[in-house]
Image (cartoon, rainbow, N blue to C red; front, side, top):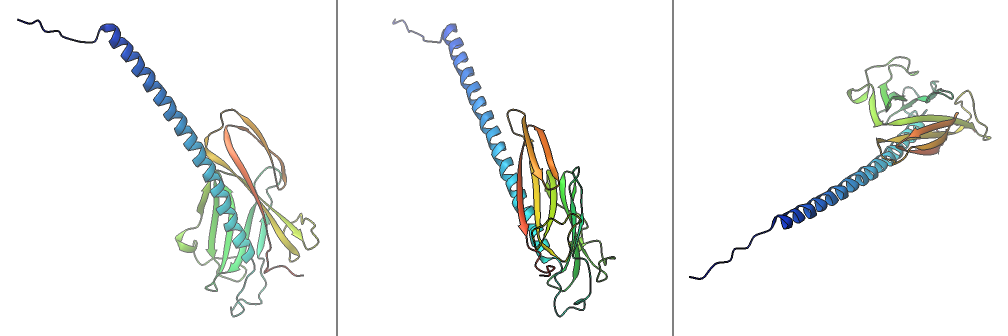
Length: 229
């Protein structure tokens, strides 16, 4: 009778295989962790850029419309204040009120302000030509709408036809409005603490020291309906 040979792994071989497998799993986990953090970092930066661009475009559009009244409107020729500026000074963000008529010849008040951590906007239909009273809580059934999260600052600067800054705010001689927005990322994505300083309107020394990513966007808009040359 022929003797059969049986083959198996030795204890040493099993231990070596276990060690190699463990190393491979650790390497895979490390690669996944690095990839995940990189992905989150990229998405956060994209979201900051998106918030800056869309917020700025929305504010610019409303300021450009400030003071507009349809020539066939019952409010045509009636005096009102199209832009009202609230200066936050060197310690706080600014806010602005904008009045104009929409395409339905409805006079509305648009208010931009920061309610940390959100950029807020209110669009309310006016009950009179000066918008001192309102006919509802807000267009589309809301009073305060959250536009984007994690805004850090919003500043408005006004310049006359000669390029001189109007310290007290907009007038009929306002040639253009300079807007500054600063947003930060949702997550802490920097590997080391970074010190970053921004010049944002009246806030000439806005300094941050943390792990968040931040970006700034500035733009100038011509309020064509209120300028008197």
